Image (cartoon, rainbow, N blue to C red; front, side, top):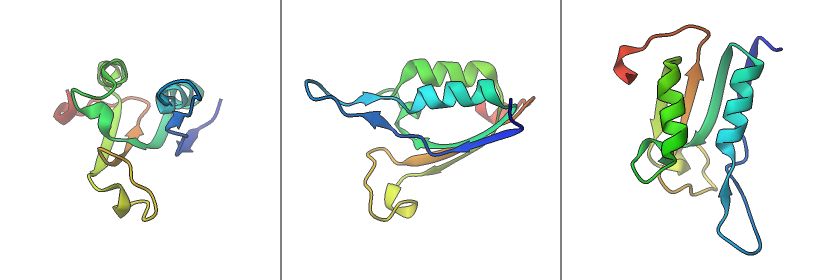
Length: 102
């Protein structure tokens, strides 16, 4: 167990025979089991209807997001990288109820 986990996990796993598999959410799930406070930098596309709806439901159902900051242009965070849909970071707290996110 840790006090805090901070991460920028790999976003996807490249497969030779198919589309890249999204894996960042697996790191987020694990981080929240390892520490009461977590800050992760991940793609922002899970917020949209075209994004990962299971991850979105999971995040919102726990009601522990203290802060969520979106960078619509990934180049504002990583100048050499293009991430479609932008980048965000979230802070997951031990006990939080942010009414703006419910």
